[in-house]
Amino acid sequence: MMEVLPLKSEETHDWCLNVHYAKRIPNIQFAFGLFDKSSLEGVVTYGMPPSPTLCIGVAGKKNAPLVIELNRLVFRKPIKNAASILVGKSLAMLPKPKIVVSYADCEQNHVGYIYQATNFIYTGLSAKYTGWKIKGLEHLHSKAVSNMARGQENPAEYLRQKYGRDFYRAEQARKHRYVFICADKKTKKRLLSELMYPIEAYPKGDSQRYAINYSPSTQNQLFACFQEEP
Image: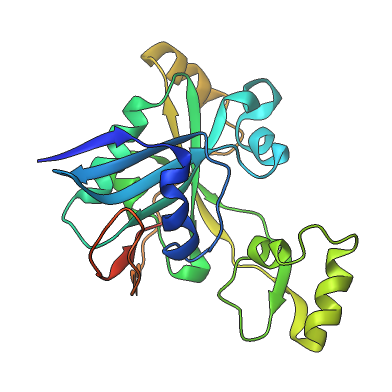
C-alpha cells in the first residue's frame, strides 16, 4: 500500500539535481515522498517562488505571503495514479491557509494534466520573457545557466567570455499556470475571489514524459527514472 510521508529537504536534492530536467535545487520549504512499503517512488517539493513579484501577481499584495510554489514533482518509474496520490495527499498536509501555484512548461511539452486531475484551477499562460541560453545546452533552464556564473561579479560577461557566441538570450516558452487554495471553505471562497487572474478552461494537448537512466541516492538498484510535470 502506498503512503505519503514528509521528507527532509536534503532527501530530495539528488532527485532535483539528477532526475528533474531543470538540474537545480529550488527553494524547498515542504517536501513529501510517495512510499511503496519502504521504497521511495517519487517526491514533491513546495517552496517560495523565485520572485516576490510573482506572488503579488497571483494573489495581490495582501495575500502574497500565502503563496508557495509546487516546484518539483518526479518519480522513478510510472505507477498508475501515483502522481495524483502524491500531489493530493501532500496538499492536504500543507499548513493552511496557502495559495499553491505551479507551472507546466510548454517547452518540455507539459500540459498540466496532473493539476487538472487534482482540482487545481487554471489561470492561463505566464508572461513572455527572455532568458540566458547556451548553444548545445538548450535543455538547461535559464536559472541553471545563471548558476554557472554564481559568485562572479558580472555573470553575463563571465559566461560570454567562457562560451563566446554560444552564449545568448532567447525568448522563453510560456508556461501553463495552475493554482490551488489550501484553506477552510470560507477562507478558500475569499481567496478565490481575490485572485488576480481570471479562471480559464483547462488546456488540452499531448503531454510528454521523459525517461532518465539514473538512480536516486535513496534507492539501491539501477532503474529508469521518469519525470512527471512540472
